[in-house]
Length: 169
Image 1 (cartoon, rainbow, N blue to C red):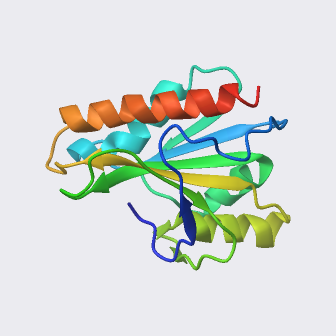
Image 2 (image 1 turned 120 degrees about the horizontal axis):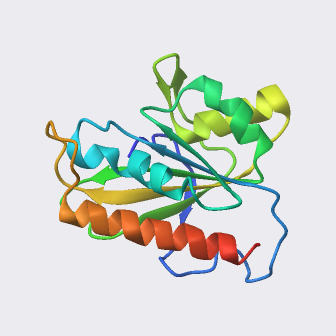
Image 3 (image 1 turned 180 degrees about the vertical axis):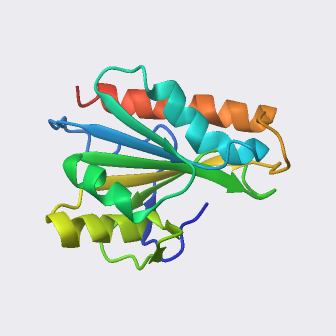
């Protein structure tokens, strides 16, 4: 997962996102990113595509994070970034709440989630609540198919996002 410079708080799967109190959110934006031609790297992109039919959730399946996403991020109350998390040590979803102050990188060829949040804040005066979800991935070879472990991770992440959204609807 492209998360350099991220200050984060790890949330266990199934844990409430906040103190359990319901809040009113006007919008949830899911940005799923990765290459659809590199097997498991497509995890975030595929999840965003699958969630696009869900009412009340805006999705952006993209191949990489770029500065132009800052405008959409600034309009959301909450943003969930979803990417593949490669490594043999990754056996389940990696869920991190992004905290202000993380140093991310930005260029015309790609940005980190933290850099996009900072850019949205600087340009539009808004920094929504943001979470990064890493989906377990093993194979980035040339393929349009994801592995079984990544498919399971996509389903787990989808369930987590839908349950999270249901708490605020």
